[in-house]
Amino acid sequence: MTTTTPVRPSAPPAARRRRPGASRRQAAPWGFLAPAIVLFVLFLALPIAYAVYLSFRTEKVSGLGLGSGARTEVWNGFANYAASLADPEFLASVGRVALYGVIVVPTMLGLALLFALLLDSRRSRATKFSRISIFLPYAVPAVISSLLWGFLYLPGVSPFYYVFDRLGWDVPSLFSSDLVIFAVANIAVWGGVGFNMVVIYTSLRAIPSELYEAAELDGCNQIGMAWRIKIPIVVPSIIMTFVFSMIATLQVFAEPTTLKPLSNTISSTWTPLMKVYRDAFIRGDLYSAAATSVIIAVATFVLSFGFLRLVQSRAFGQEK
Image (cartoon, rainbow, N blue to C red; front, side, top):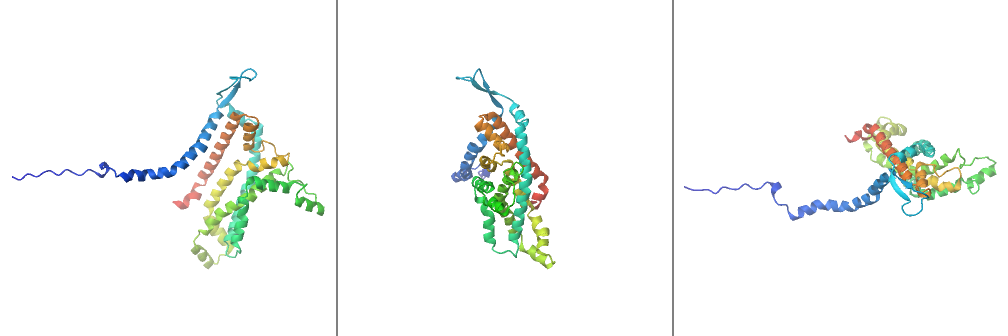
């Protein structure tokens, strides 16, 4: 009688010992991501968490506030948030930024779309030079562009006001209380049109040429082609640039801060971020500044997320 030795079933693949190089290959992506993660945690996540922590604290002063232990940090709850939301200066700055955004965002995106359509037109000439010329102001730092425009706004040194004076024209100063918001908005439009134009123009260049050929066979001219083909296709890019522009509007700081020494119509709380800077670094009230900055961050997130949710089907419907 012949006996057979039973064959032991082989271990499933999951139970097999992993090869030495497998773990290294799995750890390699984390090694590449580690520097970015460390920088994100140190310079973004931790400062945000610390600002939120400070927003719920305040300083308690005992006696004259002199000596060790005279000033202690205590829990303050939502009192800093309530004080910021009830502050007339903060509410006035929010109103100015809202008006500033109504002026800047439609004008900037309208010009960016117009320039992108003109550059994408088959009748356009010197497109490379035009692209560089339109984009170049975006490469100028906001502080430098604000200084350049600021001196052009000053009647005493501006060549434009010199020409107006020679012509006998009585032109009001752009630093007047009624026009200063347009002076600040002009700097933002001048510097931001180029970036948005490049984004929209890149989307236009990705449109298949077959669509244009079919439109031409149907007798569509350049204006009809732009209105019926180009603009509907680049709507997602327009929405993206609108969100970026809205975020930049809520965070406007460099332009009015740079123009402030040149005009007494721009206060230290002209925008919400300028108020945060004044409270934190001039008055030394870090707790109120932290609460205001958290309010600005939450408002920025809510407006951006709410707008994207509102236009989600139109902006991302092509990806489905």
